[in-house]
Length: 359
Ligand SMILES: NC(=O)c1ccc[n+]([C@@H]2O[C@H](COP(=O)([O-])OP(=O)(O)OC[C@H]3O[C@@H](n4cnc5c(N)ncnc54)[C@H](OP(=O)(O)O)[C@@H]3O)[C@@H](O)[C@H]2O)c1
Image (cartoon, rainbow, N blue to C red; front, side):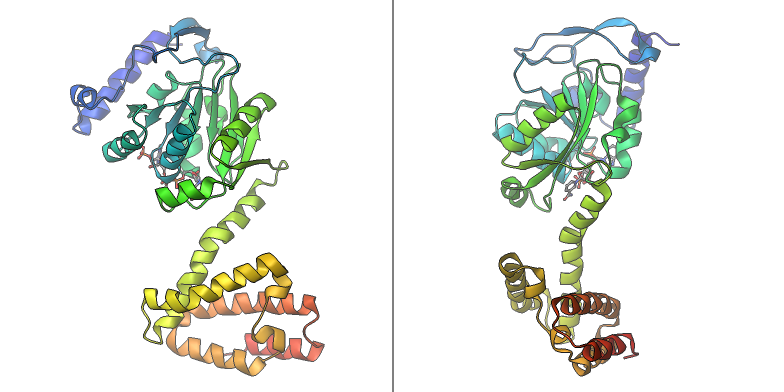
């Protein structure tokens, strides 16, 4: 078993080698204010001496990870400066949350993060950031969460969370040690644009997960950025996330289908959205006010099988990729119309036959 100091030295050498391969020397990074191996402590926060809880590294050692005073918000670092990491960093720091560090492998993303959150220390490696904070937020793709957690070692008293809507806190198990906590913090927001996402965080649902102590901090964090924290029932996360993906990507897929069909009329995207988005928005408003069943309009509510057959023929000729989408959505409309009692059994059957027929 390697001593802790030897492991740190080996990690440092490996980092330096990788930096050299990327053409970024430590001096250059230091000149940019990027700390790969911070020696000091954050102003106002003293160094701590802990025993690392992981048995494999169970030796007493001093390390500089930051400490908040009891009752204060935990000193926080964000790994990943993509859309979610950046927006959370900006929202939290604007709310006065102590965001002190970011780790990003990309120089452009590091610079952009520091422009928006000047108080942070920027790191290339997630491991270096861990020493500087109490709460580590992994804002990386779902598939990267567990592999990244494998490379991290938390100290007693620290916590780690990810922002995935699908994964549970157990994905972070490899980083855990005695006395550490893991959780999740998933804002139900489409992070397509920084300013729009910051606005959307106000009033957004934020699914949080973790031990009671950590969850209290996460609820505070959600409320600090204007969100509404919710705790999901165990095992519900995949369904919760599937509905979220339909709400965001599913709607984009529908809009893209509308765009494709409208191109047969000679409309470009702006033209198509100009005339069809108001109808989409009106339908959403109707569903909000009247409920989903009452918001349904169109041939499925009237039993207009001939209209459906004409649509299938038109799509087959002009936008064949839209056909399976149209069929799937109309089949769902048919189920809604039947549930609503809008159709006779004969009309339901006529529509079903039309939808199944060849265009
Ligand atoms: N996008 C959304 O609307 C949304 C909404 C709610 C929740 N989420 C969740 O939030 C998380 C991040 O989403 P995102 O859209 O910001 O993701 P992303 O843009 O795909 O990635 C975010 C950052 O992760 C880092 N990264 C990528 N691959 C990595 C790897 N193999 N190892 C370490 N770091 C890696 C990259 O940071 P650097 O290159 O800077 O190091 C990248 O900028 C995901 O779990 C996602 O499910 C997303």
